[in-house]
Length: 485
Image 1 (cartoon, rainbow, N blue to C red):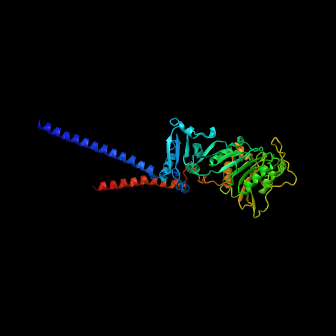
Image 2 (cartoon, rainbow, N blue to C red):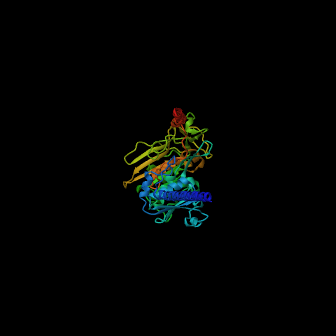
Image 3 (tube, rainbow, N blue to C red):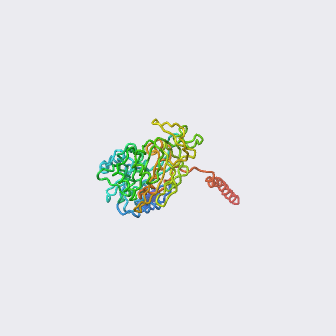
């Protein structure tokens, strides 16, 4: 009996000790779990989390900090079915450092009213199932940004998409600036004279929209449409001349400091359009005769797309509009009209070559079937300007800027955009003609993890060799100590 009593007592003590240990263990786990949840909430709320991504994708720079510091009105973002962890972490960091910025995740299936609330002008601009919707109630403005717009990509020689960068920070900060701004840059595309139509300029309009500008197609005599000096006016290859009253409106816009982007194709009858010709000459743009194109010399194979010598691969000159472009920027100007290389600038007008043909280029006749005779016209000698820039001081002491391109296909042909740097070139040109606060110069983060090089393997190789050596040294020390025992 006595043995059983003491055995039961010892068993009861073991049970009590085991139960106490279990309770303590569970309590410690609960405390750690609560601390983890609490610290995670604090990290997200106050932006304490350290960015450990290899390309610092969840951090932002000084330009974004200026945007957040200057944000005086609330901006809310709806992340529509967005599951990208890096993007959501960056949104958390924005919200943690700016009291006027908030965001939430939503689903179109659970929130169908979002589409009707932010109704787009066209179906192509409607809210998709994988996008961000920026909204500022103070301005009443919204911006739907598809996730694909945050990807910086190019095409390889076979036409396959190659992702090069991620533009999370640039798109987020630019969209915030856009919806919160009191005034948005307008791009006015002129119609009514046989210019490129809305259907022909879809690529260009999309580029302007992605640069956070509002695009309008208008006619000069339309009621309620007035050109403002801050607008960027696009006149794209008109085929009929302006009336005298329309010319007065255009000249008044230029005198007030307005900027223009112009195109003039080889088939445009400039000689029969005196008012259009006078507007071009106002900026020192002197087009070569109608019906002629710049043709590359067969002795300069790198200056054209073989075997078509009228498909020019021009060189981009270093100007104020191209200083951010790479030196080897690739462009393609098909059936391009040439312009006379401008003379020395005076104190009121400075005209520079933007895009140039090769030295051996010459003028040749171009047929309606887009076939060149390949025979040089008399006294024609390159190089020819295929694009020009101009800055003009007006009679009102305002600065008016203009650019002209000799081929409108640069703006309209998707196959050119897919194989050249045309998009970057046009974005830089538009940014020079019309600087915008909404378009921030934030470089994309690399989307491709850098490969290991011979130099980067050095430290790892040393560690791999040292570990077994250290283990062997420790084993020898232990064996030597045990032999003395």
